[in-house]
Amino acid sequence: MAHAPEMDRALPELDRARPTMDRARPTMDRAVGRPMLDKLMTAEAATALIRDGDHVAIGGTLYSRTPMALVFALLRQRRHHLTVSRPLACYEIELFLSTGALDRIVTSWVGIGLPWGLPPIFRHYAERGEVGYDEWSHLAMGLRYKAGAMGVPFLPSRTMLGSDLAAQLDLQTVTCPYTGEQLAAVPALNPDVALIHAHRADMFGNVQVDGYQHMDVDMARAARTVIVSAEQVVSPEEIAARPDRTMLPHFTVDAVVAAPYGAYPHECYGRYGPDLRHFDAYVAAAREHGPAAGLRYVEQNVDAHAGFASFVAAVGPDRLAALAADAGELMRQ
Image (cartoon, rainbow, N blue to C red):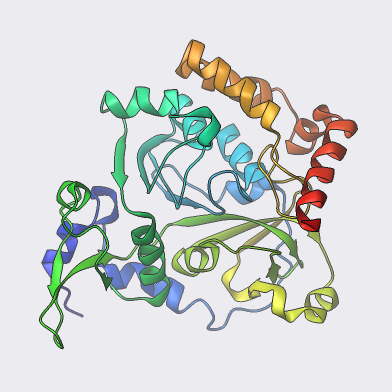
């Protein structure tokens, strides 16, 4: 199949290894001959599927339903030359930077949250040119995952036209065959691996989420490998009893990890709120010590524990109960 060479120019450097449709085809074909298998495994076994140089997409957005149990397991493995994409990135980006894992970031925004301002460790690396940074609009990120999920090389849009971002990214345009209008050709994004945290999943990989799904569905369908952590692993019968909650069917998922509090210290809608005290402590250290604080955070919160469950247990039952109460209060409003 021929593909337009001008579209390759619109793709970031690490996304140009193969023609767009060839990258998308494994995702398009994944439902064919894909049996229902027990996909339960540990976070360490699941993240061992990620190789040096992979493009890893992280589900959720900012500090909402971030797959922190999977992020911690990946940090423990000290991978290198990764590209990470996310709709809105939080301080997990700084942890990857501080451990030398990242070559490139693809997102619409990197921050910790409005109360804490710009992330100091990210600024350290980005302003020195020590990491590649592809900044797209939030809409463009959604369109990139959606194009990847659809198996098309790009989607037309007006987003970013006339902006400095379009010029920096060498965003290509197409002429609408119906109106003659010039539109942005937003290129597909097909990650090697997607990491997603959910409320429930069964052992086969049927996945359910309460509340916002963010961009997780398109992200998963665009990726070659999908790893899901879940607050609860439940029976297939429980999944079938609430089919309207099912976000991903089993044939889109490669691994399932049981991870209670698997988004902590970020939030999981209806289960627990974000631990803002944890954020405060992290930001204070990052402002004072820069990248060394990010590495120290990983050493103390990831490396020093046998696993993510040990990290969560160290928080203490009282604090976890308070975060659960915060989430419950939000549900009642």
